[in-house]
Structures are given as structure tokens and as C-alpha cells.
Length: 498
Image 1 (tube, rainbow, N blue to C red):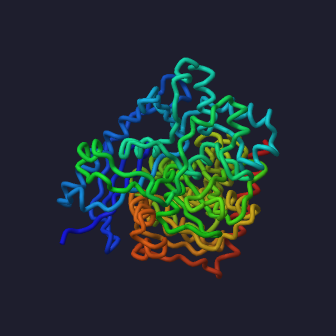
Image 2: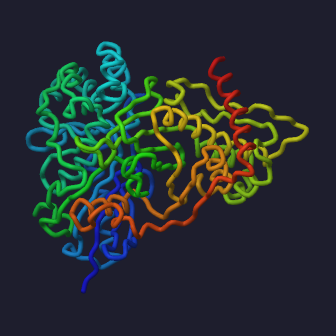
Image 3: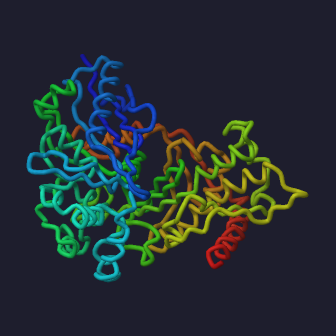
């Protein structure tokens, strides 16, 4: 009997990853990504960032071809397909489903004035009360830029999509989206529980431009004959899950319920928590979207804290302070300095404006350094502590919104490979940290299994998720961690108020 698989795609801005997951064991049978070097981003002007959606499709095909070859899998062996994707992008197609312009992707900032103007003219109470965010630089504001600057092209638009919706369209021929997807584009009204007509009307968008809404976990379409021939899949295979990369990362870590937290700490850092009540931060220091399991009957919101200056600071320290050792040795070196780094404090916000600081750009700064007593170990530890403390500073905003943070799920990667980083995060937050072996494409595959009814729920889908380690808060060191955090926060407040 042939193995049965679930297929997951993870459509990022640097590559597209594909994974085959064994239905019975939950094991990853094969995984691949293309391109092997970072995919190009078109930047015609400063602050612009675009990609050709066809490139995503081409890279998805190449990734799929490799994993099918590695496993000798056939199209009929794949029972369902799930899609994770880079959030907030804009794809515009005409009535023939032809792409009209390159996608304006998540890191493009040209639409900021359009979101700010909408927030000012519609009012904070209206926007935050209904959208849970400022219209900001999200998909709706990007479309407003197109309407204003490319009116002839705008007139040709039949439907707008997110990047994951585009890949689904290429697979099945149908155009649809999810409530979670609309919410990340600022096009879902959480009070009315329907598309945000007031914002569409403000920008002058016809509601018919929005794709049909389908549940996140459901058979959203089936592989067409054309796509089956192009990809070597079986016609009729269900596409049964899609979600943006941050809610999908939470799904891949089995984070579905209020109080559960998913975290990543790569170049930038993310803390994503699930809230069971509709709420928002009045200062917009965190973003709030519909989580993957949100429905009009069940409030499940994903609260997203993003810190720009995390792993990028650690990488800077390695290059400039400890260039002759690897990251593992760096992590060992950090452990040789005491909690609080003997008075050295590093504010890590040196990678642009930080939303958690109300979009202020205060830079990275080092405080308390003594040439007579401090060495490499203090700087390495202070950098990692500064990253942890920035997470905890943002998590306080989430707690004020009503989120109880008692458990953090993370992949064992990047900063979470550092014992000092993990111990400090547990020590300051008081939360237990659980480390798992998973990634976005695997989460998308298992989400597809849920959406197709192969798994009855997330408990069954993620029963085989490998827990690699559990880090409990060390109560004997709790006061030392909290004192170090309090002193760091004093420096942060002073830096903000300069």
C-alpha cells in the first residue's frame, strides 16, 4: 500500500517551501524550498517592495517536483493541500484571472499615508472598534495607492487577493479568501461580522472586488485538470486550508486557544498570542487579526507583537564583538556572565521604527559599560537579555488586553537555540517554554488534514508534534531576572523620552 500524504506550501518573500507529511505518522517525509538563494524583491523606489506572483507559482512547482521525486510519491498519494503565505500582500487580477501588476508585498511602505489619512478622517474609535487596528500599511491601503496612482489599471481590477489566495487560484481556478485573510488586510468588520463596508466605501472600493469567503479549515477548492497536469497532482485533490504566515506558525505549534502563545526569534522577533474576546490596544502597539480558527460564532483573535531588532542584533554582535566563534560558542559565552550582565544594558531597537514603541525609531544603545570590568561575555549576554526584555515589554501590552501568558510554544531554532535566551524569557515572563520540531509548510499540511476531515481536530492533527524540550521558570532566580528587567526598562523609558 502506498503512503498517504498531506502537502503544505509556505509562500514566503525569500522562497517557497513545500513539505510532504505522512498522514499516519505525522512525520515529514520530504521538504524543499526554491530558490536556494533569496528570491528577488523589486524596489523601483525607496520604500517599495514588489514581487511577481508568477515567481511564487514557479518556485512552488520546483519545490513540489523535488519532494515528489525524493519520495517517489504520485499525485493520487496526496490527500489534501494547505497553504501558508506572506501576509498583507496585494495581488490584482482582471476578469480573465490575469495578474495586472506585480504584487505589493508586506514590507512595502508606500501606502502608509493612505492608512494614516483614513485613521484620522474615520476616527480612532471607528477604526479600532471595528478593525481592531489602524488601516495602517495593510492591503486595503495598498489598494488605495493603486487607485490613486494607477487609475487605468485600477479600473481593470476584477478581484483582489492575498498571496495565498493567488496560489490557491492557480491550483483550483477559483478565487476565494478567508475571514482571517480579510482581517489582515483591514477589510473585516469585527463588530458587524462581515466585510468592512465603511472602509471600502471610504476608499471608493466596490465590495465585488473582494473574493468569496470560505472557512479556513474547509474544502476551499479542488485541483483543476490544468493544474494537475502542470504539477503532477491528481485532479480533484482538495485545497483545504490557508492562513497567513503568523497565524499559520501558531497553528504549526498547536496554538489555538486563549492564553496560548507562539513565538519566533529570527532576524525579527514575533510573539503571537490567542485572545478569546474581541479587544485591541488603543495605542496600536500590537496588531490584532482573526486567528485561523476564528468564526462569526467563536472569537479567536491573534494578537501579533513584532520586534524588528532581535536576531539581527545577535548577528551584529557575532560579526563585530565575537567574530572568531560560532553561535553555539556565543551562547555558551553568554552563560558565563551573571544575570543582568553586571550592569550592561542594551536597548535592541536598531532596525528601524518599532510599532511597540508607537513607531518611534530610537536606535540601539549600550548603557553601563565599564572598560575596567566588562568583557565579551557581558556584551553577548546583554544583547540577548535586551532581546528578551523587548519581548516582555511587548507582552505587557498583550496582558493589558486580557491575555494570560502562561505557556510559550516555539520552534527550536534561531534565538531559541540559546539556553540563556530561553531561561531569561521563562524567568521574566513566568511562562513555561515548550520547544517543538516543526515549520510553516508542515503546519499548512496538517491544517489541510483538518480542513479535509482527515483529522477530526487539532488535537489529533498535532498529536505527533515532537516536543524537544520544556523550560520551566527557575523560581530561585526569578527576583534577579525581574530586577534586571526593571533596570533595563528604566533605560528604555529614558531613551524614549530623550
